[in-house]
Image 1: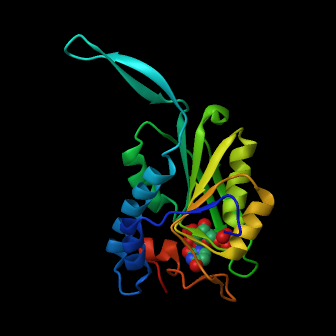
Image 2 (image 1 turned 45 degrees about the horizontal axis):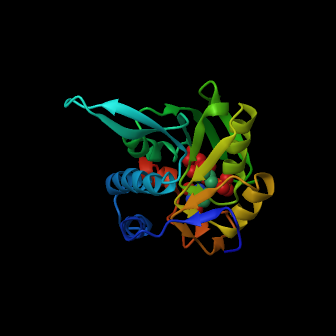
Length: 212
Ligand code: PRP
Ligand code: URA
């Protein structure tokens, strides 16, 4: 793999859902449901090495059982709009996580990220921060969102997406060389309008039924 901090999660359940999402015939409602499910499965995989600390609890039988707690709080940060479609599934799995919101859209002509909202949880320095957006295309939106998290103090950050383009990885890792990116697929590249190929189309439009 060309990028040291890029991880592709190739579990068959994830890949089957991704294939249905790529299919142009998949209705918005199914696309939304699948994005929620696939995000939860991916987060389950990507968090398997989270740091933990040992604890002991007393069971109803008056015995102590050894167990564990996550060593750090979790913070989920979806990038609007499409990252919101990932939040519900992930938050159901990790309900104790705080949630930050970052509003970014990509200018259609320049393809540069335009920030319009940012509200992040306090004390991000001690948190495990997971930034959510299904698409890493030119990488501008993802790189900017991670920069905002770092500015807010976050130190343990990872980025979760469904599709990553080589161009996006180049740009992202040039800015954040040690922030891990987890993806379900590493696609071929971008078209002249910055869309991932073969891709899955415009994720926000397919989520919310705003295709032209
Ligand atoms: C999409 C996607 C990412 C961004 C990726 O959002 O959800 O945020 O494009 O492209 P990049 O890697 O080239 O920055 P979009 O700009 O379409 O905004 P929307 O979700 O509000 O429609
Ligand atoms: N944003 C999308 O939603 N899809 C792409 O292919 C690229 C950017």
